[in-house]
Length: 154
Image 1 (spheres, rainbow, N blue to C red):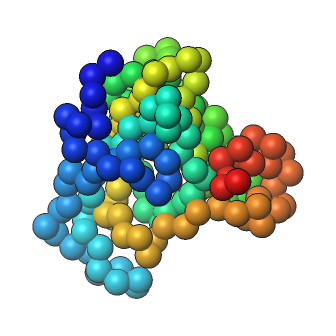
Image 2: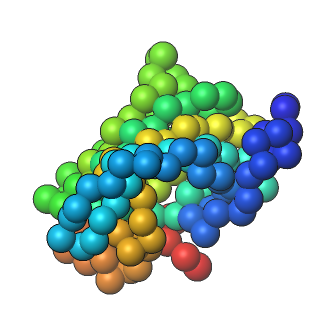
């Protein structure tokens, strides 16, 4: 396996795995919660030593593109309680859109050694628009709780 961490200059991510921001648009959008770049992008890597991305949500839409490795499983929870599960890297599926306001988590599956993803966030990412899930956030979604609980902090 290539040493993506060194090659791309990745750092540990609070969600799990490793990342580095690779793009921030010079154009900003005036939003009620403050100005945001029109778009931002990161490289995001899960490895065998960091195989899980914690359950979180953002206010912005996030496009995910599997660049190398996999498969990766994404579990999502829509505001209406609809649970989604998508595997990137199987059946030629290499793209996933997670709309703003949806919870999402990710993990390596099927013995994958790593999964390198490019993410594009629009409007651009800001930590003020991000939150990690807690057990309390899953109340009211009994069909999703068992699937999503492993993605919560222990």
